[in-house]
Length: 291
Length: 85
Ligand SMILES: Cc1ncc(C[n+]2csc(CCOP(=O)(O)OP(=O)(O)O)c2C)c(N)n1
Ligand code: SF4
Ligand code: SF4
Image 1 (cartoon, chains in turn red, green):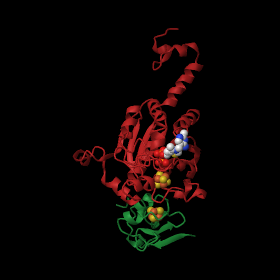
Image 2 (cartoon, chains in turn blue, red):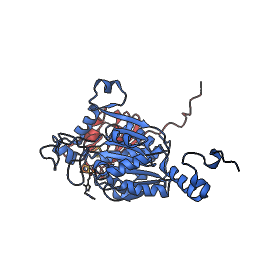
Image 3 (tube, protein in one colour):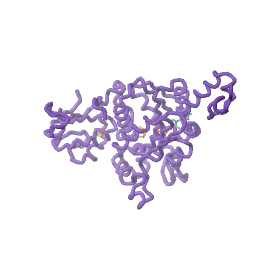
Image 4 (cartoon, helix red, strand yellow):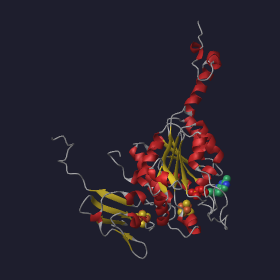
């Protein structure tokens, strides 16, 4: 923690509080953890751009006193890519719902990961479309009741961690709104990471997911996160492989997209010699070019 | 204004609950390991046992409405980085 811990209100637009999320909604706990991470990193408000799509999760952008863009459902990463390419020195954070990130926004997600552009994505996974009243999402999974699956869903869920990993994200983690200390640590690592970082946060929607699936309330759902998870690489997980692994799955370095793009600009501006140099090999000198 | 202040004798000075932001979800009441909170039939939270707080920060971090502030006791000024071997 930074020594001069700022009050939670410092990064908030307090004039919009109390926020509109329901009582017990996990999205508020993610906001809580994010404020702590940003404080820990000592980031200035003007160094961060939050870009969100549409959904309950996307409303986070309204409550934070950063540069904020509240854009279109599923398209946050398209806007975020534009912002990052034009101002690569800024930190970009995208809070996405599971539908926003992996249903309508799924294609943007895999390609942003493939490019390894320096953006931090938070997938606030409540396994349902909260804002529109409880339709099932690609993360609901089999046996889940939703307004669009009154006899329960028969669709397998994506594993967001494996999808992000396979797509090329260079930092991939999962945590929950119960694991609040771990959440801060992981968010801090993700924001610091240079490259595409994905943090899936299991976040309860008591209003739609809970009500339709056994009348679960926020406290029950948090207890579920406590009981049904185990740290990645732990004995506990080895003994009970059905538990949901939490922790950091991928943390590696790979060339970042804005840096590569700068290489394109340099080659374009560097004249014919630079243009003919094969990418990744150091131009004329590396090709043994004598004067 | 709308903020309930409770005094603690030990690690923390007080536990503040912002009543204008609290939505009475009961998370703090359910998860405090020392049971410092209490809710009435309407779900209004109070802090009858602040002196039991061990400053684990669980309530402050779990609260989805950022409505809880733990105010730690200020460190005595005589305590400096301990190299007085
Ligand atoms: C192009 C478009 N399609 C559909 C919608 C309707 N819509 C708004 S939010 C949403 C899904 C919200 O679910 P999710 O992204 O999981 O976020 P949550 O609300 O659960 O946080 C949908 C389908 C829209 N706003 N725009
Ligand atoms: S509908 Fe669900 S996701 Fe949306 S604010 Fe309410 S609890 Fe949160
Ligand atoms: S966790 Fe926060 S919002 Fe919920 S009852 Fe406690 S103080 Fe109120």
